[in-house]
Amino acid sequence: MNILAVESSCDETSVAIVKDGKEVLSHIVLSQIDIHKVFGGVVPEIASRNHVIHMTRVFDQAIKDSKLSIDEIDLVAVTQGPGLIGSLLVGINAATAFAFANGKKIIGVNHLIGHIYAANIEHTIEFPAIALLVSGGHTELLYLKDHMDFKMLGTTLDDAVGEAYDKVARTLGLDYPGGPIIDKLSLLGKDTYNLPRAYLEKDSLNFSFSGLKSSVINIVHNANQKNEEIRVNDMCASFQASVLDVLVDKTKLACQKLDVKQVIIAGGVAANKGLRARIKEEIKDKEILIPDMKYCTDNAAMIGAAAYYQYQKQGAHPNYLLGGLSTIA
Ligand code: KG4
Ligand code: ZN
Image (cartoon, rainbow, N blue to C red; front, side):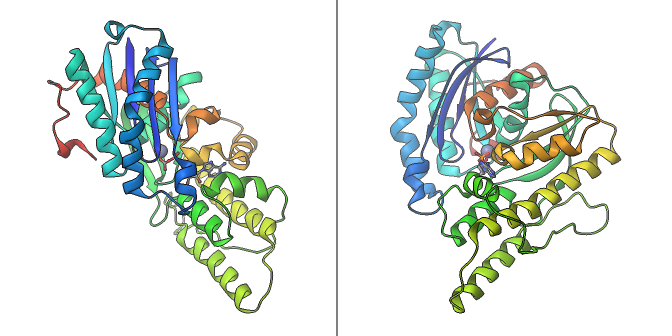
C-alpha cells in the first residue's frame, strides 16, 4: 500500500510517500528554521503563510521522487493535530484537495502517534513497549499495548522539554532551535551550576521543566545585574545533565513498573546525542528503539508510517472530508 503523507503542524512543510508503513519511497522536508530564527521561535502566522507558498511544490517533488504515478497512490494521510491551527489547515486542505481531485481515500493522523511510528520505519516496534515522546510541544511517557492502543503514563505539568531547551538557549543568547546547540555546547562544559531536578512526588511519571528553566533565567539575570559572565558551556552542560537525569530516571521507573520488551525514544528531542547515549547506557535489559535523526524532528514519513497501521485498524474516512474542524485535536 502506497501512502502519500503530509505534515505541516509547525514549521516544516513535508510530504512523503511510504510503502506498507516502512519503505520511504520519497521524502521532502522543507524547514522554515532560517525564517523563524530571527524571531527566536516559530511565528505561527509566518509559518502558515510559508506552508501556503511551498506546499504544492513539495507535493509535486515528493510524487516525482517516488517514481510512482498518481494512480499507484492508495491512500492520503495528513497530520490533523496537535499543532498550530493555521499551519495544520494548510496541510489538511492540500491533502483533502489532492484526495478529492484524484478519488483517493484520506485519513487524519495524530502528530504524536506519528512521532512514535518514526521508530517503526527502520526498526520494528514489538508490543508491549514504553515510549518516551519528547518534542517542542510534548513530553510524555506512554505504554504501547498494541498498534494504535496506547495509554498515557505521565506528561509534563508545565513546559515541554524541547520548549525548555529553546527558552534556555534564548536566555543564553543562543540561536533557535536551542536543543541542538545546547546539546553540542554541553560537551564543552561541566555540570557546575547545580540546577534543580524536578522528580515530583514519589513514583510519579509526570514531568516539570518550568522550575529548571526559571533557575537558569534567574542565574543569568543575577549575573547580568552584577556584570558577571555566565560560563555558557557549563550552563549548557548543567541544564542538559538536569534534563537527562529526569528523563532517563523516569523512563527507568516506567520500565520497573511495566513489563515491556522495548523502549522507544521519539520526537525532536530524541535527536539529542546525550539522551541517545544515556538511555542506551542505563537501560541495558530492553531493546532501545530510536529513530534515525532525520525522522526525529517533524517529517511526513512518520505520518505515512503511522497511517498504514491506523488504516488497518480503523479504515479511512467515509468521504473525502476529514469531518471538519472538529477532527483537529
Ligand atoms: O518534534 P519537533 O521537530 O517538533 C515538535 O513537534 O515540537 O521538535 C522540535 C524540538 C525543538 O524544541 C528543538 O529544540 C528540539 O526538538 N531538538 C532538540 C535537539 N534537536 C531538536 N533538543 C535537544 N537536543 C537536540 N539535539
Ligand atoms: Zn513534532
